[in-house]
Image (tube, rainbow, N blue to C red):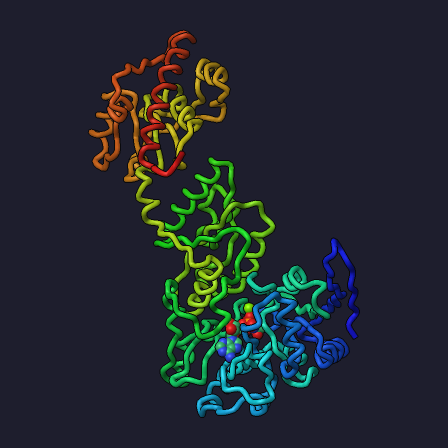
Length: 524
Ligand code: TXA
Ligand code: MG
């Protein structure tokens, strides 16, 4: 039944099979495709299919040989047990013994759906399927294609997520194809899945039942129905060296190719820290990937930013997580940084998967943000048509370890004006331009905790201090740099005076850049 070819390449025998891909509409299921797929499973083949959580790699759960094939196709260690998928509640009786009383109540509430329960296995279930364990994991999926396939296959379909072991679970048929094309018999393409994260696993062999893997069915939801449930301790403590109770949870999982780091703090701190990390990489000629949300996406200026969903509806984040992790494999990036998510409701499952994808690498945002003494620098001159814009542009061209908004303002600006011709001529000689500059008036909003305001002389500084009660971080350039160089004012003078000013300013801006860089250690 399988079309298999063996051929020799550099003395390695490659087992290649043609994978049939059939598109199938959930709302109008083509029975002939399902019958065909069911037949493949009955004959010991492998068929990937959609479920409401992620795509599964189906095999006959009661066939030891089929289990072996499953492990081989995924490249998965065979001590990692498979979940048996059923379509009817009474199918349980054949594969499990000792069904606890509350099972029916749980099943009534959550089956069909994203919940897997673990029971003692019966003799009908081969050890190949359970990874050698005396227990078996069972789930009744709600996806219509999945249900039809299970029925067509005889009622018992083992299905791990249909990805290569270690990679993010597939949420589309394209993901399955990318990992398993040529290694399995068939893929049923039913479009994107709904939930996007694997089922909640509940161990029913202990009382109270214990959650071994968080998912869309949360502890709170279960407790409402059956009272107390516990949670596998190793899930709560990422530094735990204990073995998790679900064997699969011990492997580094869901991982993109580039190293992923989770950045933790308030959302504001996370954004500022990731911005800084992206900027540092950019300076060094690297590009980072950033996992952002609707709420934060626009604040990133460097790196490849992927929007994972909205914090207002974490289901969108769950649905997109694996696709985003996979998408980053197509990008030329050195590393990935992710914001973190609240650990409540489905956020538990999101953070659990994100942490595994990151190999538990987390960093705190606060210390990175603390190094950012200023985030904005404003040069204030009289008219904002010569000295201010020149200083600002020189600083923009300096090698800074941190990203700053660098601007200039004038104390007396009645209407917007460009820089004068002599300024532009001098800038051109330095391969810069202020062509797009127009003067802007200094305003109270230019004063803030994160803005450094620099004036060209004492009197301008004093004017700001006396005019605005909210004055903070206002210095003359000489004062800030502890430098006595006299800064000339070329205004109304010949071109040579502008040239002189430019050279003096260039030296001072070099000094300013060094001082600013000294606040941000860690740069090169
Ligand atoms: O949503 C899902 O559950 C998906 C779809 C396809 O149904 N399936 C899935 O399967 O995520 P898989 O193989 O990727 O993950 C199964 C997890 C593993 O962590 C495995 O160790 C655990 O379930 N598991 C299976 N049987 C177990 C058992 N008897 N005792 C403890 N853990 C078990
Ligand atoms: Mg998996």
